[in-house]
Image (cartoon, rainbow, N blue to C red):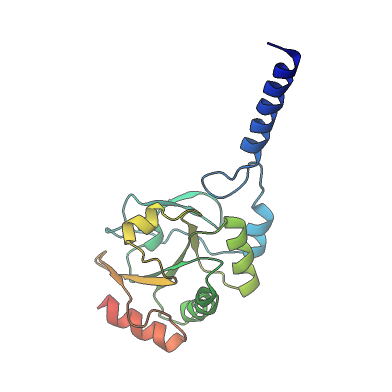
Length: 194
């Protein structure tokens, strides 16, 4: 091996090591990225709700609030629960998230669990903090598919919302697709949870 070849191999190995070190992990974070400050700023509610629902048992996601893994059935609880799928790049999601937070603050409201997809967790935490949304949130990855999206068969257009009934049945809210005010959320939860 010539000296030039040895240098080329050494530079190639070094370059590959640098690329691997800065590539995002499967969860969308880069190695060593500290989400603690973003989590503190977002101040999200806990992801678990108590007794698990049945339809989503075994589906796991990362809790944005504390970074731990959570079984979606435990996050949903015993229902009814509204599950909302959103992404940071989705403009209608930015409108809908504060509406869902306002609904969840009402006495007697169903539990609301949000699921961030197709965007990085740090961007999601930043958006939730910016919007003042403190709902429990799980992260389903930044790719095109994730375990939550697979289990719910989420359509490509976001946002997408579901109601998990007290019996554990999952129902897609198709009318209206965008929950634009608290009255619409209240009415959709009542209709789909029945």
